[in-house]
Length: 264
Ligand SMILES: *[C@@H]1O[C@H](CO)[C@@H](O)[C@H](O)[C@H]1NC(C)=O
Ligand SMILES: *[C@@H]1O[C@H](CO)[C@@H](O)[C@H](O)[C@H]1NC(C)=O
Ligand SMILES: *[C@@H]1O[C@H](CO)[C@@H](O)[C@H](O)[C@H]1NC(C)=O
Ligand SMILES: *[C@@H]1O[C@H](CO)[C@@H](O)[C@H](O)[C@H]1NC(C)=O
Ligand SMILES: *[C@@H]1O[C@H](CO)[C@@H](O)[C@H](O)[C@H]1NC(C)=O
Image 1 (cartoon, rainbow, N blue to C red):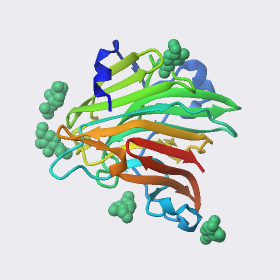
Image 2: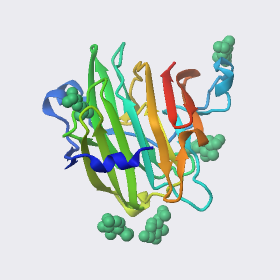
Image 3: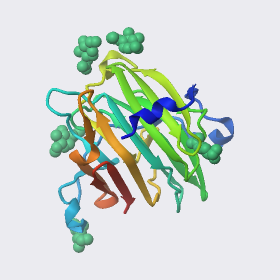
Image 4: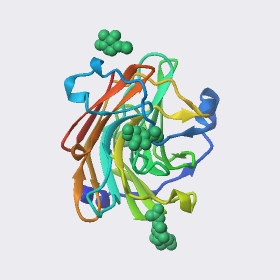
């Protein structure tokens, strides 16, 4: 993982908004109230429909991707990075999100510090929003980093202490970086540094899962976390597959520091 690359870019303080751009707000009134959730277990996974490589995966109704379920003994995850290409959605109206985060797995369900990109398709047109969220607070949109399908984006989270972190998004096409410090909504949301993850999510709006859109695939490269002592590749963790109502919606494979999530 090329962590040093982050420090040579032009850094801009990011601008955030919890309100949505007015033009789009009309189209996506439902984008208000958007939130990510900790991993929810799937209850109805039919593993006989899976390839043998995936039968030991973890099954979730809202997450697919790579999950480091615990840090090396005596350590905590304090840093995570990853790069992905914003997918082009196809088919009926729907949405999905791609993000990286610390905590939120079964070993740390009370909070998540996460940063990513939401992808929507509405009447065949793709729309994207960059955002961060310190769950349980709702997401904030990062308004000064326009994102489009095909953009290569590098994400990074650096935890300063358990209620403060630095989030950074870099557009690899231009080297332009947007970065800023974020704080936990309250002390109960203090990070434990127990899980780290690279996730495609069926997120929630107004308390309901959004219709999950067909995204082809999302490949997180340079998917590594850091504890301050050592670097941990995604492959040390668990592949998570998304299943709802007995159907798999997304299947994950992990190879060293590359996490590939495919729409099923
Ligand atoms: C999900 O399943 C795991 C392992 O089976 C369990 O440890 C965890 O408590 C479950 N989480 C929830 C929210 O039910
Ligand atoms: C599970 O998947 C297999 C293979 O796709 C299929 O034949 C079977 O009917 C499924 N079982 C259930 C309960 O859906
Ligand atoms: C990245 O830069 C390219 C080239 O200027 C631009 O087209 C694209 O919108 C940018 N993407 C992001 C996420 O800033
Ligand atoms: C956490 O770090 C931030 C930024 O450096 C600092 O303002 C804050 O006081 C620290 N909190 C604690 C509890 O140390
Ligand atoms: C967060 O850090 C403070 C010390 O700065 C500590 O008292 C607290 O227990 C920590 N919380 C968690 C969840 O680790």
